[in-house]
Length: 415
Image (cartoon, rainbow, N blue to C red; front, side):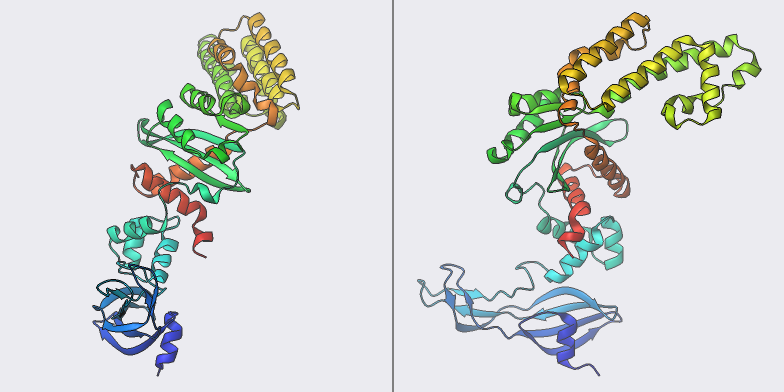
């Protein structure tokens, strides 16, 4: 037989005594308790009050389950009268283990939040036998829908990218994040990707934090770059993410590969064409990672297509420049030399990329200053994509911010 004192230990709630326990149905238990705490504070003047004025209305609060039973704490909180204020108002005593107007204890709300980490509202609803609206209410009370700047001391690098909430590249939101004290945090999820929205967000960053920013990493979208330059000025280096840059020049190589493979399929014998198997993947692999067989296939392809050899070597040459420990000035000279090599090669597949280089030379070569990139943003975007699929499509950017924040920091918050 479990005593009341043992039940108190199981409940883990301070300042109470158990009056009685009633079972309801097959899986619910109601535990009636009374406060053992004396006094409170006047809701009007804030002064301590100890003149007891009876008890308030009975409230029923969902608590952590005990032995598989859905558990409710039932209490009639004490009321106290303030004899200092005019008309001597009364105030209901507040205990630390629940929040006024919430139908749950704080311990139960923390358990809901822990259950929600890397899970869906629907899953938690089924597991805890709790309505989705109630879960969303707990989420709103527990996790802010925007970053708390007061908790951040400095921001050295800001990363910015976008993601589509719906298929077909529709309903874009902008993801802004950073590493703060070696911890990846989401700074904002904006309703769209327009320059005006991003500009407004950057300006909302407190001045003390804006002064600490050294780099803004972005893709080559002019709205992001323009907003960063408008707010941070020349003091901050706006860096084009090198992986976005690499994607562009490798796409040029891929366009030429497809064109040449169509030509070779028409011109070569079936035997010779079939000897070029898997060139799609071989061309994409770094040369130093190729096996001996793969190098033989690649050289055979280049014998049939000298243009493709030129383009392949140019891509690898630019990658080597980006990998080299160069200053910005050295990097810029190397890239301008690479541009001249492309022009001399007479290849046209890089024409579009050359225009990008000319238009964004400063942002691309800013990479050499601190070798910063927005890889961490891409990692966060992948988390968001998984979350979006798992949660059956979150279309509210505020809710998305809460869920991303919870997945990133929840275990530390509710340990």
